[in-house]
Amino acid sequence: MFGGLLFYQKGGEKMPKQSEHTAQESGLTVQQERFCYEYHVDFDGKRAAIDSGYSPSNAAQQASRLLTKANVQKFLQKIMSEKDDDLIATADEVLETLTRVLRRHEREHIVVTLKKRESKHDERGKKVIVDTETAEAFEIPAKLSDVTRAAELLGKAHGLYTDKVDHSGGVQINFSGENDLK
Image 1 (cartoon, rainbow, N blue to C red):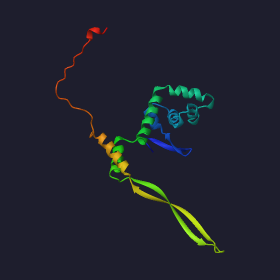
Image 2 (image 1 turned 120 degrees about the vertical axis):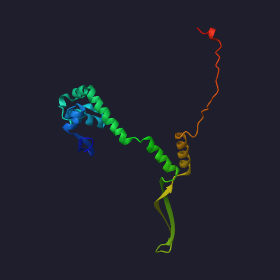
Image 3 (image 1 turned 60 degrees about the vertical axis):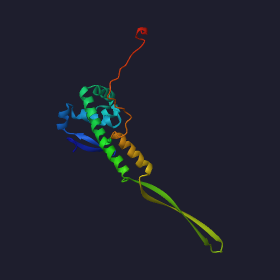
Image 4 (image 1 turned 60 degrees about the horizontal axis):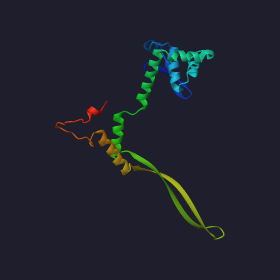
């Protein structure tokens, strides 16, 4: 259960299955909430209306009507903000990642192709050269250029590099040609 919602499977994707309790909190019916979740999948109103139990014959009109309701719009915004919280990195996450790169805790994976040349003689005594290639993956620390860039971005985030000049004295500004302006 997630935030008062039960889940059901749809095409390999977990979709919330609303409870009466959740529907009452949002001011929507269970069917309207289901429409919101279905609509959020691909923003196809007609498909969302049909999949949430509305009649296929007037699904497009029903979707249009639902999408103009303020409480439906509010619930859609709530769904999107919850998804954003899960999918979009916070400022702290970005700074933590940059710090891991700076400290070279982040690792890169490279694939190296190893070539081996072997010389043999076949059954007739003729020399045969056999080339074999194998790929191996290695873990290496972050590149120095990545470390430098991470340090630069962290420095900017912490205000270490500023182009601002603090001026503590007074400044007098004189405008000339004021009479020429109309």
